[in-house]
Image (tube, rainbow, N blue to C red):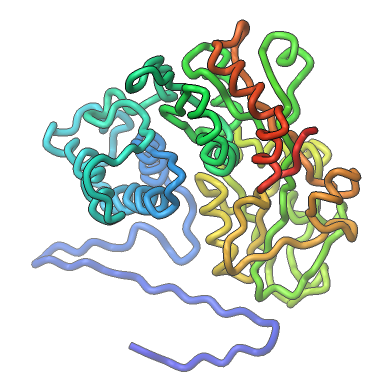
Length: 384
């Protein structure tokens, strides 16, 4: 089926297609209309996705393959099966085999032979163990000590893999690396469920008094738009208006006459980006309506394909198809961050319980050393 559409400059066009499934005398109508709202079924699917095993690895191809596999498995869940919030606990055992199978598919798709070291969350073999942070394992092969991490994805994906070779020379290796976000990682470290957490927001005075912490660097949050969007910069007031919903058209910002679509990570998920943008740019006000995704890479992929969308994410996560815009005339560069001229600079903390394990003290000392700060400086602004 094809048809011609003429769209005037600066205008937008939208349509929907309904799939109606017919089998003999049974007809299944679409569950949603053109402009859908979240339903009980959406919430159940989101709950399943939150429980499903995640991985964090320096191999970007494996990481993306696994994430897409989880999204595909969520999409394949039929709604007749999903009317109970505890469905993962009452599934037939054969249906749990998808996760070990997915690991094997990961190995084949990445073209890796033999051993594949992926820092998985525990519980690959059944749903009753698919919750919570990575376990704090202490011993690896031979004399290595395994160190577990949870918290900010930016640190877990873009800093720890870079410092791992130096850390390995000291006899330590990262075991499980979680990506559940700043607040959940902090809670896990405080409880001793992981050795160290990554925190991408300012610590409170109480948190600093109770925990072992080190400020290892600074990250610039970029405000990203599609390369097709002609807006090059906004003021702080305009940025606030974008994410609170006060500004609804790009025309108000010097762009096309098209709706503004703010895209964020899940706002109730305790993610550092969501918390810091609210603190730094929204003056503590609540977010308006946004399109929500599980984490920043999903947000950026949406923006790359949608000229009306805008999101905030670490500059270390930039992908083709997006570009960061200036705020009050300042670009998100290291020099502007050091000079205090860029609004969305945020601290990068590593945090542990008190007293911290020896492996964590070694990690903090390494990252604050000249060698470690040079590693931080590859993608971020060093603390020293």
